[in-house]
Length: 50
Image 1 (cartoon, rainbow, N blue to C red):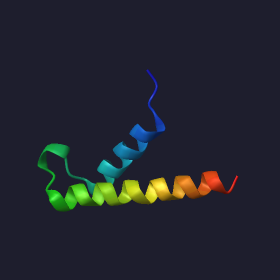
Image 2 (image 1 turned 180 degrees about the vertical axis):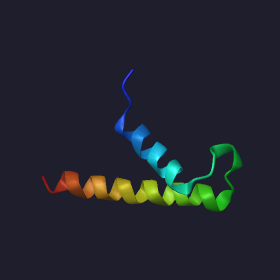
Image 3 (image 1 turned 90 degrees about the horizontal axis):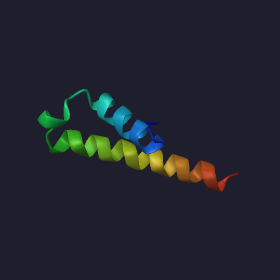
Image 4 (image 1 turned 90 degrees about the vertical axis):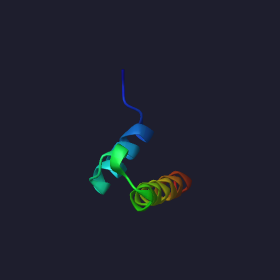
């Protein structure tokens, strides 16, 4: 089974926080969401420039 690009982004964002998901507090989850939001904006901008 192949890994989707979205799953790769989520895994990378979680890895950057360096806290296991079960131990994350609100600030850690917010950091993951913030990184995913930034990636989505970058992906969107790259798509619209083609």
